[in-house]
Amino acid sequence: MLKTQIISRVQSSRIVTGIRVFTVLTLMLAMNTSVTAQDPQYSQFYAAPLYLNPAFAGSTGQARAGINYRNQWPSIDANFTTMSAYFDYFIEDKNSGVGAMITRDVEGLAGLQSLSLALQYSYEMKITDQLGFRPGFQAALYNRSINFDKLTFGDQFDPLTGNIIDSESAETFNTGFRKTFVDLSAGGVFFTRVAWLGFSAFHLNQPNQSISGDGNSPLPIKLSVHGGFKFYMKPGVVGNGIYSRNAERSIAPAIQYRHQGKFDQMDLGLYFTFEPLVLGTWYRGVPFKNIDGFVNNESIVLLLGFTKLGAKDAINIGYSFDYTISKLGPGSGGAHEFSLVYTWPMRNPRKPPKDKLIIPCPNF
Image 1: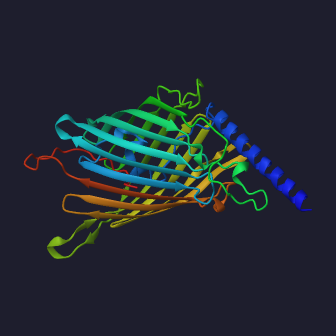
Image 2 (image 1 turned 120 degrees about the horizontal axis):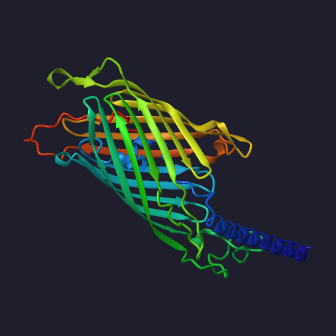
Image 3 (image 1 turned 90 degrees about the horizontal axis):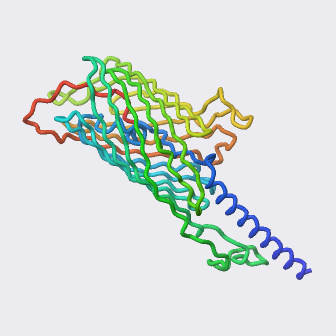
């Protein structure tokens, strides 16, 4: 009986090993196709403006620094963690915006990692007194790699208990799978004092992102169209006496539609600003386009934001949660996202400011 159990355990371990190896081979095969090439996404896409569109570099007319963090599907192994940090600044004398952004994206199951450093430039044009246009360009350096350290194999398990008894396996893999490439992108945004319409195209040169050997896997172009309208209501008041000032009260419907390779996605929702609080809710999905026979409903997103305006600076803090409504279900853990943005002036205070339009899009 005991011998039978041992044989059964060994066979189970071999099955586990086979599954793991099959998974690795499948993953390596997938890295040489374009169907898995989809960029990370942020629910608070306006809190990651340079990631959304290089034309937003310098769009506040001041200096701005921000941090974004997203943890998607934390309850399952195949989770994704995305982090980015950026800085941008408006050069008033040149009507130009410049920016820099670093982004890191990690897949939890096999340790597939992408790290990028991007530089942006934008130029502001005044078409009429009420209409402006900002074209923008981006050049980025990407580094992608994979780490097999998180995989386990049959020789690491106790054949009787199934517990891991050895942290190292005799299985060996080439861990030097790494790819570095240059990526080019562009975008633009039309705007008035109450509305905006932007478009961006990333990976215009479709660089080869294949990590393994001499494979060829062009990174598909990602297209994004985004816009909205801000309805201003009667302002409120914050502070007392001589320290009192008007506080924004507004409703801003907004939309973003993205296309990359075989993937399409849409964000449609509303931002409610009752300074210092911002509430947001929107739907992500493309209900009129099925994927393998399933309706493309991904999530419902809820946002809570806080805005604090100083005499010259401002800070925005946001938290959002994606409630999964796709076939993956809420058991995936949805997605948690945090943003922190600080804006401050860097211009010469002795020079009178130019009368310029500011893009009215939300900060979250």
